[in-house]
Length: 115
Image 1 (cartoon, rainbow, N blue to C red):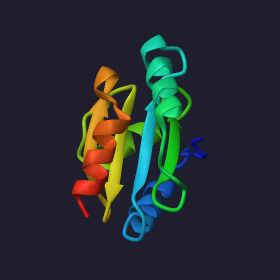
Image 2: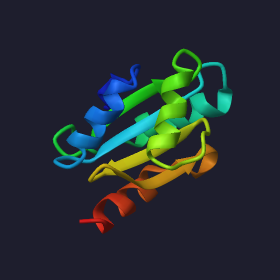
Image 3: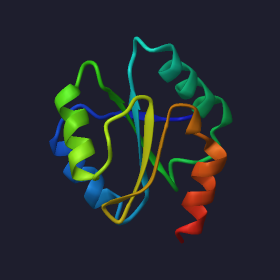
């Protein structure tokens, strides 16, 4: 089960950067009115196998917090997309996937390859 933390302020981006130096963080950018985004979220939640002790998860509602979504894209040098997952480690985005490319298996590979 994923314990989502709501990402709703730009200040939290700095917190994520600092936290990611100790424990990797995942940001899931979600559009609440998009069926593709809903399917990606459902797939993540169904296949999830990480624990909170090894990966902190953030949920960003891009419709409600568009400025935060834009700031995330700028800070982590990614294109804005939804749905999208970003793996943040040592204050940098080390994995970025969107739409049907979002996969727990690929996330695991990237997660474990970077240790």
